[in-house]
Amino acid sequence: MAIPEKNRPTTLEEAVEQLKSDPFHAVRLHINDVYVEVHLVKGEERKKRLGDFMAEGGGWKGEPAEEILRILREARKAGGTTEPPDGL
Image (cartoon, rainbow, N blue to C red):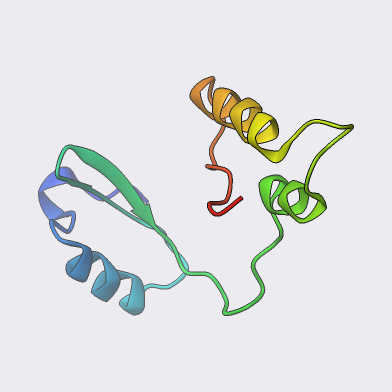
């Protein structure tokens, strides 16, 4: 069910409150020229993402981690959805 723009939250705090009242529906808002969607996730049940999995393995086929991160960043710019993990 789409929420009219005028009824959408305008702060992250309002979005969290709306999510608490209806945890089964993601909340969308536009803040600081960025569109944000907030949804509920269960504690530690987050699925491992490809970037996380690859980061655990270090270099890949002799390529350094920096090269793999460059490839992943290029994929994200081309339409991917997740930034590679920091700290590698």
